[in-house]
Amino acid sequence: MYECDIAVIGGGPAGLAAAIEAKKHGAGKVLLIDRDIELGGILQQCVHNGFGLHIFREELTGTEYAERFIKELKDLGIEYKLDTMVLSITQEKVISMVNKTEGIVNIRARAVILAMGCRERTRGALNIPGTRPSGIFTAGTAQRFINKEGYMVGRNVVILGSGDIGMIMARRLTLEGARVRVVAEALPYPGGLVRNVVQCLNDFDIPLLLNHTIVDIKGKDRIEGVIIAEVDENRKPIDGRARYYECDTLLLSVGLIPENELSKGIGVKLDPVTGGPVVNESMETTVKGIFACGNVVHVHDIVDYVTEESRKAGRSAALFVNEKGGEWGTPISTRPGNGIRYIVPHLIREDKVGHSVDLFMRVDKIFTDKKLVVKSGDTVIRVIKKAYMRPGEMERISIAADSLKAADNLPLTVDVE
Image (cartoon, rainbow, N blue to C red; front, side, top):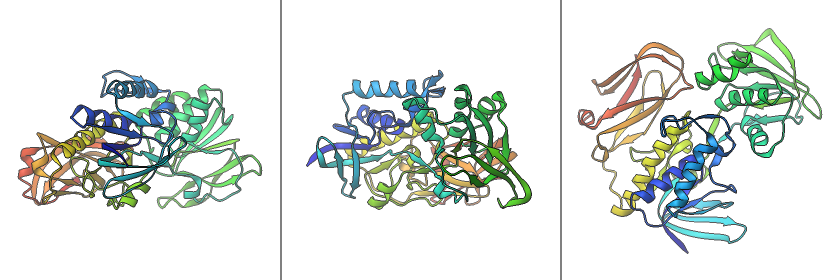
């Protein structure tokens, strides 16, 4: 039985930051496990810039951002295992993993940090009618083919969904000489960041069709075209509002799903909205000594926020190991109110909060000239005026520790007013 103080599952931006922070805060033996053949996760295929503005105060590519953490991990002497798949984790924190050189190995950890990231929603989850030809990719798969493997996925492209990866790939494909016919989005607003709408679509004259979706796929061996129809407020196609677009490639950028099969196996409680674990202010899940961070908890729009959250998980796991944790007590719960889809963290232990605690959330539709109001019962804790809010961009509210005392163990509710 292999033993360590903290096992980190996942070697992407979340896992790297958590492992480094745990080591810096006194954890003895930290082991990082990743199923890929190199550290860095999704960042290794992100050759575009825009990373590191919050953490490093400079603009980096995804690969440059990852390399800084990989170097620090190695400088700290943190052990890591690549090309290794975690099969299961027990509530006693026994991890079963397998790789080509060691076979099946069991590891006993004193604390575990879940940092497995997320996966893309595929065509199978969308139920798009039509044939099943080649030439249909998720946006992330196409990004890997082009940026890492050196393969061009197509020349005449349609993109379904306006997630950030999809819009970034619209620009990337254009720069590689492809023609991106259109980006279709079923919602009345873009799914990604505004900066990506401007820099990746508008700057390259790529049309974005809101309230539109694909209703049929044509082609036998290779995709030959798609039919895109306008949809109503219930996302139902409107008769007579459809158009055929010829294409040899279709990219899907229709959402991300936290990778939580391992979390379910442990018995961690999951949030039905985010699909990620329910966590407290220390990023500890409902299973004692099991922590989670990054996109496995909720999908972030900026990797710098993933790093900040994961550092908190690493510090908390080191504290748990060194002090043998602490009892949950009676935490204050957070509840999404009017206009709010979800809030992370879900639970706050007042005695574990330092100067303040940050609440992360997303609104459920576009709002202009509104306020985010944090309440405890009828008591208003904080009010923030917002000129513009949209589901594609995360909102962040900092709550002072003194304000939590006014909560008196009542749930904290956030409303759009």
